[in-house]
Length: 194
Image (cartoon, rainbow, N blue to C red):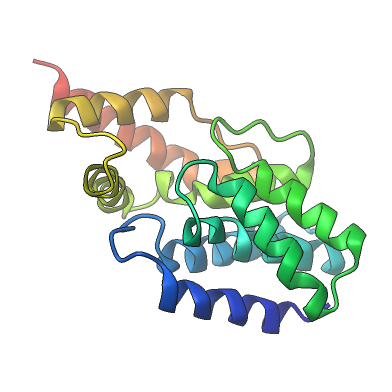
């Protein structure tokens, strides 16, 4: 398995081919999720082979956006299945990557430790200082691409509901991100409460 080459390949394609209207699901988001996956997998003491599969899934988890917005996870899996054999991934490796990509679909329902890590990595920003920046990137992406148009109050209500229902799964993500995520939730409640 040549993770570095596979990741460089897909990152390069995302840089060149992603629609510039994708202000949230952009190449920077993918790089961010790879880094969060690496950090969480290290903290959770994941063995090296599984860590490579996790990072591969992170690299490919939104590449389906090159093809379609709705159900992009399925398109991401299709693209990973086409590409990864050329980088030395076996069928069982690819099955594992596909499983990890699919669990990032919202709402997230991870069933094992690796699934928990990639879910936490994908939504790592919820508990970071750049939460509001990323939130508004998603709002803009939805509006520009005709997904959904919202007023500011409607958007904050959507974010409040999402943060209320969201949970981090791994002890590491809870330690790193949960407190600040809850602070963001309180800030939103203060903004929309008369």
